[in-house]
Length: 105
Image (cartoon, rainbow, N blue to C red; front, side, top):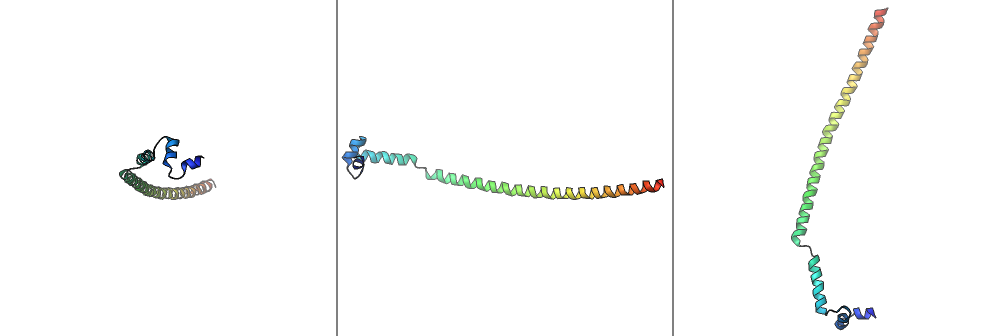
């Protein structure tokens, strides 16, 4: 019964069911569409803002990568310096041990 009321172009049935004529229903539907429509400028602005944000994020990542590269180079230099220091300290200790043994005997 409800399907019969809603199907077809029987505007009288819809009018009885909803209390609105076909023209009034079309006007309401059109008003709903207009209300929910996003203006083209807003969409374009949103796309532009998203593109700008993506570009800034990409630039930030590039800069971060450069800083990480510099940091990695400095870390490698410090590691080499520490290894050289440890080697020199070992040699110095060995020299001092030899002197003290030879000085006793």
